[in-house]
Amino acid sequence: MRGFVTLVSKHIHESRWMLVLSAASLFGLGWLFVFVTSRSELEILKMLASDDDSGRAQWMRNMGMADSPNSLSIMMAFWNHPLIILTLSLWAINRGSSAVAAEVERGTMDMVLSRPISRSGYLATQVLYAVVGLALLASALVVGAAVGVHYNALREPPSAWSLIKPALNLTALGLSIYGYTLLASACDQVRWRPSSIGSVLTLGGFIAYVVSMIPVLQNQSWRPYLEKISIFKAYNPVELVTTGESLARNVSILAGIGAACILLAFVVFNRRDLPTNA
Amino acid sequence: MDRSPVIVTEGLTKYYGHLAALEGLSVEVRRGEVFGLLGPNGSGKTTAIRLLLGMLRPTAGWAKVGGFDVWRDSLEVRRQVSYLPGEIRMYQSMTGYQMLKLLSDLRDGVGLDRAVAIGERVMELDLGRKIRAFSTGMKQKLALAQVFSDPVDTLILDEPTSALDPSARGLVLDLVRDARSAGQSVIFSGHVLSEVEQVADRVAIMRKGRLMHLEDMHERKRARMLLLRFQVGATVEVPAMLELHPRDQTDGVLLFEHQGALKPLLEWLAAAPVDDVAIGVEDLQSLYDRFHGPGALVSEHGA
Image 1: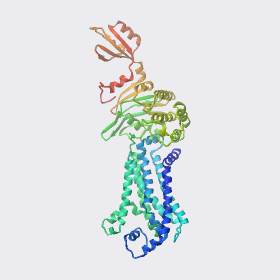
Image 2: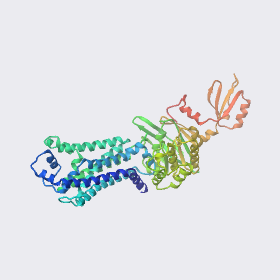
Image 3: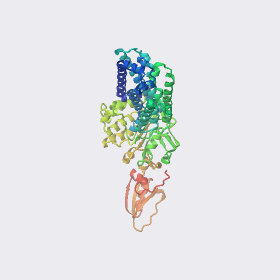
Image 4: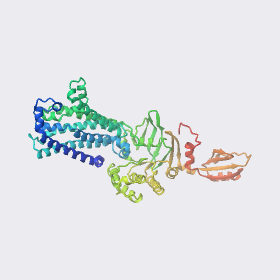
C-alpha cells in the first residue's frame, strides 16, 4: 500500500502544474461561456426563432438546440468548444502516453519496477491518477460555470446540479481518449508514437464529427458513417440538458471504450518485455 | 556460511525474432558469493540480468531466485533483489533525498537511513540538490547508496563503476566485499576486469549470448603460470605428478599452468635442462582474451 501511495504522489509531483493549469483554464472557460451566454442569449434566441435558414442557425440546430432553448442549453452549446475538448484531450493524451512508453523511454521504468511493485499495481496508480484528474478537470468546468452563473444575469439560471450530467459525459469522453492512448503506450517504448496515435484519433474523430454536421453535407450518403466512427457522437451536452435521454447510452459507450482499452493495456503491459531505454 | 544456490538458471534463453540475445544459460549463484559476469557489449549479460528481474520473458528455460520463478513470481523475486541498472535514469525534478525516499518507500520504507548515511558520508553527496544538477557519476553514487542499503539477499550490479572516479571505484569494491561478508550474493557485471578480479569468487565469460567459460577465481589464484625455455636439443618429459599442464608454445618458450605442490616442481626444475624460467600468476585479462582477444579461437557452442 505504501508503494501504491508513493507512486501516486510521484505522478502528482511530476504533473501537478499541468493539472493545476488545465483546471484553471477549464474554470475560466466555464465562467467565460456563462458570460457569453448572458451577453448573447437574446440574439441567439431571435436567430433560432426566425425563419432564417442560414448555415449558422442550422448548425446550431444540428447541435441539438431547439428553436426556444433555455439558458442552460445555449450554455451547453459552448461546451462543445474546441478549447474545452483540447484541454481535456491534452491531459488524457499526456497521462496515457507517459504511463508506460515515456517511462520506458527515459529509463525510469527500470528503476521503479526493479523494486517490489507489481506491474498491475504500477499501472493502476497511473490509471487512478489520470481518471481522478479527468474528474477534477470536468469539475473545474462545472465550478467555473456555477460561479459564473452567480455573477452573470441569465434568463433562466441553471442549478449547479444540472451541470453534473454534461460533466459526466465530458469525463467519459476524456476516459475514452485516455484509454486508447494508454493502450498504445502500453505496447510501446517511445513516447512520441502513443502521443501521435492519441492525437490523430482524437483530432480525426473531432473533424469527422464536425464535418458530419456541416449543413450542406447533410444529404451525403457517407455522412452517417462519418458520424458513427467518431467518439464525439457520444458527447452531446445540449441534448443531455434538454431531454437527458442519451446520458446512460453516451456514457456507457465512451466509458466502455475507455474501460476496454484500459483493460487491454493491463493485459499487454503484464505480458510484454520491458527493454532497456538504450 | 550456508552456500546453497540463491539463483539457479537452466537453459535460460531469450530470442528477439530470430536473434538470440541469450541462449541456454545454466548457472548457479551461491549464497554469499560475488559472481562476475564478463563479456563485450551484446554478449547477453544485461539480457540475463533483465530476465532475472522479470523484465523480460524467457523464450525457453527457466530461472529461479530464492526459489521463486523469475517470470511468474517476479514480485517475490524483486523483494529479494536490489538492482543497479547500467544506465542510471532518475526523476530530474527530485532532490537526492527525495529520490532515496521514493526508492525506499517502494520497498515499504526500509533502508532509508542507511541509504542517506552511505550517500552523505561514504559517497559525499549533497542530497539536498536536485538530480538535474547531478553529474552522471553522482547519480551512479546515489543509486549505489540505495542498492547497498536495501535489506535483500541478492544485489545485481550492472556496470556499477562505469561512471565513477578511481577513489569511488575503490569504495564500491569495499561495499561489495562488505555485502559478501554480510551473506549477500552479488552479481557483478562489468568491463573493468581488474575490478571483477579483485572481488569475484567466480566469473562467467559470455560471448554472443552464450556462456563460454565459468572460472573459480580462488582456484585460479592458486594456479601458477610457468614460462620455461629448455636447452636446445634437450628432450624433456614432464612427470604427471607435477600437475604441470602445457598451455602454449612460442619460439621455443613453453607456457605451463601449475596447480600442484611447489616443492616437487622446484626439485624437478633444478634437475631439468632449463635455460630460463619465469613463474607468475595469470591475470583475468589473459583468460578473457582466450575468448575475446584478437586471436581467440573459441567454440561457438559455449561452456
